[in-house]
Amino acid sequence: MKKVKFSAVLFIAVFVTILAAGCSDDNGASNNKKSGVNIGIVLPTKDEPRWVQDESRFQDALKDSDYTTEILFSQGSSAKEKENVETLISKGIDVLIIAPHDAAAAGAAVEEAKRDDIKVISYDRLITDTDAVDYYVTFDSIAVGEAQGQYLIDHAGEDSGIPLYLYAGAASDNNAFLFFEGAWKVLQPKIADGTFLVANSSVAEDLKEKTELTRDELGKVLGQITTNWDPNEAKNKAQTNLTAADKDLKGDVAILAPNDGTSRSIADVFAGDPDISDYVITGQDSEKASIQYIIDGKQSMTVFKDVRSLVTDAMGMAVDLLDEKTPETTGTYDNGSLEVPAKQTEVIVVDQDNVKSELIDSGYYEESEFTGLE
Ligand code: BGC
Image (cartoon, rainbow, N blue to C red; front, top):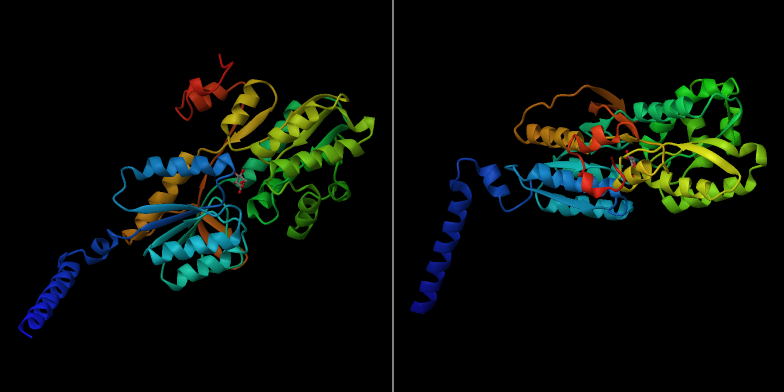
């Protein structure tokens, strides 16, 4: 009996000590968070070097952070993405930074976060059709497309009737629309005046007199030329296009490829066709493999999106929110439900001429990671 009483007293004492420890800190909230996670980061897939770049740049940025973070990948699945968000919610995050796999499907995941008073930052890709997004950090995606289109105009030669092959990203990604919209803005007048001849999209050909395309029209073009951001799908589509193309759609050609992963596989297909004498092809992301392709003359350009800036902006915004400050923004983006306050970063065109100064001298990559760079 006596023994039992002693155990009970001890139990109560331990319990009271634990409770007191939980309350004793004058900064209770962040003290509690020491065992949890402050900022949750969800990225679309580990299978594309672009997002592995983001992961490692986040890791670099987090080294000196006072806040705890966790990065999870959704592996191209909206279900996995939602599960990731739920895991992070259960770990007590106050801010969620998320690059959605599918812009609209991610709405359900962030709405769940919002119900828990978590601040949501859409990262690189805008989450659409929900009001559960607080902020957006992004590159200037229209400018990415414009730079790609302009590069084709400037490097495809002086002739008219240059065959133009168009490829785009996944229609589930809002950026794919913005990239194509930017490219169309500069390419359309050159298609309308006969400089370029659209080789692989009857829909784009039908719309060639229209300077600005509606979302619906863009969707129809994308439906024909999408790669779904998948290098294999891009390769198959390029093969199908070249098989169907007559000789007059070969020779020296221009190719709008939406990003580096798809650009390399499309370039390989075109390089392997004996009736293609030369090609100029775009890209974006400055993936290491594409930098090597540019040095080797197999890919013409990439749009350098300095992920360090995006990560700095996203982390800066998250820390402001944790510190209960209002983050600085530069404009807004309409996500179909609301105007999302956004911070936007500029992009840089990289080709053989400036690859060294932009990417090596700036410390983004090491010279030793490439061969043939003088
Ligand atoms: C990103 C690109 C990326 C693509 C495929 C886009 O939303 O902005 O950088 O190449 O997705 O992952």
